[in-house]
Length: 339
Image (cartoon, rainbow, N blue to C red):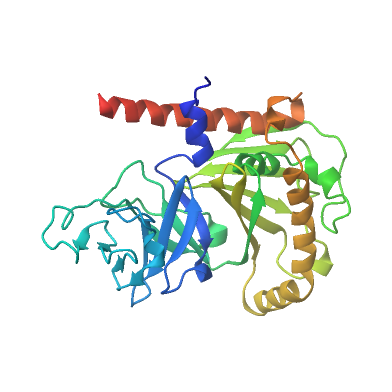
């Protein structure tokens, strides 16, 4: 009888005590929505003033989905027996048995959620916490000097294959060789790693500003990745095209893929680029992204168990090792608290 590796299980569901993007902001309205993310089934809804709330989609009475119930502002009423659960997980009313021990108890898991960069972000805490740390995103998503579009999609497969793909600048030269922005540069390269204050950069040695030449991975309380792609003049104003990515597990065979396509510009140049993007560039960018999706979805789930890696793969080897070490550290802390 095989046993489940707890490190692997934690990585598959998503590391704890981090912020994750879970869906575009437009997905959530006043009608409760059910989403599976990070090993949980979640109920999300907006209060009367638009404030977001998130509970585990599980009524503490009999486990019925709260997302199928009624939005009462700061709480949901279960459709099965009318039990009311507040956004902090406290059961405020049990109409079928007033005064029972369930009333007033915090019997439902709740989550801190916020909105930024057109997305809903959830803090994946190891346990209920009174206050979540601030969400810290890269300047491309927070500075007025940048303009961006959120590209959201869902891909079949483990989210870690997406991490591997982005931490692999060399694939751009081959998989995306017909792209208008990734057809230049050497078809072979040596890679080097450079540490940063929040992570590291994996880059082609002696080649910058030619192709998809480098990838940055960072941990600012949320894991994000960043790269730049040189743009021809036909791409409009703004210099290099920045892509910020963050990836969230839905299930072992499905993941939520967030890419923000960004450029540093303002004024009329911003308006020009945004018009150009929606009318010409967006279709091209989706075509490139589809090449990534197709190759990853056709890989076997256990493809990474039979690999022959070489120098180009040092970045993803480092990232895999780092993620595994983070999972081990989290499990050790959880075990220590249970002693």
